[in-house]
Image (cartoon, rainbow, N blue to C red; front, side, top):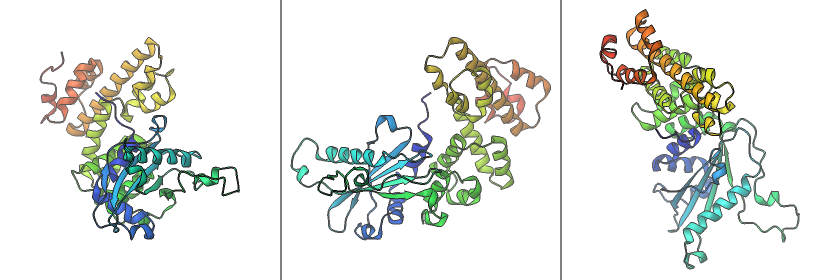
Length: 352
């Protein structure tokens, strides 16, 4: 099964890839002098990323084309900085990304080089530490002589989500819910987020998935909180997402099981339950330990799902799960969501 994308990038793109939400973002977060020049039509979301491959794990970007009231077009380039502390090299990185955008626009011809559209750079930051990055490349150049400070870009617009009041994050309720989640405050505003994201929408699932993948949250405690708040649909969705993450080696519920077999593994792989850490030259014994830990984690997850649906498990069923092979447990996991009763789950052996 394919690996999940970076959770920060996934949520960031989900929030702004909708043209309506993107338009609301621009009107909420661009200076009034720029907003006044935007035509009413929503922006066009353009394909592609311009971020350096080495920084893809900590940066996300989105390029939009906007129509201006003058009849011309401009680009808005939104770069999201996901690190918990700001990167002082960001203005230099941003300038290189803008040059890449202009190069792609110009192509191989020369006519467009004489009329490059403006690029409005917006930096979105939601890290815990204060923003201490220079405001522009000019502030990074070691000279006070303006005649020596030749610049590829004058600066950027910073939107520090952490430093903003909740109501100022956006007038769009869905955007505000997503930004609150990026700030890691979703649990404190659970009722608002649940009310802002309609049931059955992709964004509702993506926000909850972000919480499960990024927040340091106890799954049982979160499940109890959702149940107490009457968010039954979110509780059920949480179980579905957790099972999906389990299959892709990302479920936090597997961390304890994998830890037993991966004590000597890479720290990040241990904490996140990611098998990717083993690909870096892990010994055969560690791989076997991962398999045992993953099997135990799946068995624990199966037991929790069965108890949630059918109540406390009989001893013989619990013993059967503990002794089962991984492929049989996976077959029972497939069956547990649709089975009307406990007996149906174990009625037939669907393993090989």
